[in-house]
Image (tube, rainbow, N blue to C red; front, side):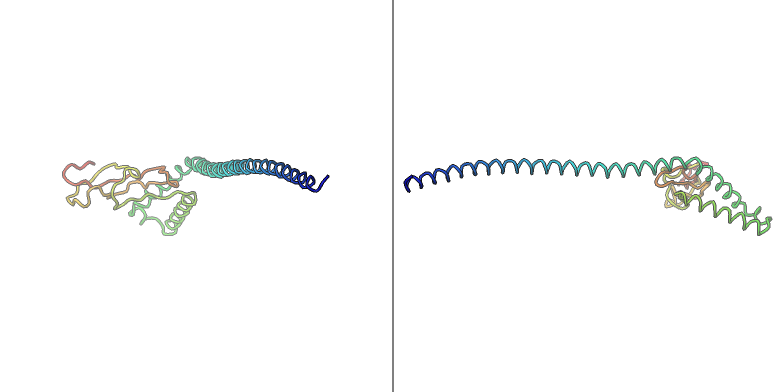
Length: 186
């Protein structure tokens, strides 16, 4: 081969090699794009699955708490009835004066322990005395006439305290409210 032929062959080889490399490079770039696309798709799927799992855990925990609160409700209602009995006993001051002081102190201590048990189980008292009547948390069982417009629809007497378990009202407070004007209900 002559030097010119040798150069021509080498140029053809380089050209063919460049074409092959260019084609391979193009194929590699396409494969890389496909791999990046799949990786992004897998990452997005993994992120969705992780978010779904976190939501599932949160919902499961919330359902567990609601189930537990619902399971405690009957017992708590019985204990509330017991607390009402204590409140009724303490409301008769004349009767309490005739009871020996040690006995009275013992009963007050038992009442305080009962209230601690109720509070320890997530129960809070609704005691709306002096507040504006709220039909969501209170049940009006009567009214007292008032001449003061500012006192209209205010709770003036709590017959039975209300109770909430978390944000759920398990028993509304039974109250009497002020009614402005002559149309009072008793």
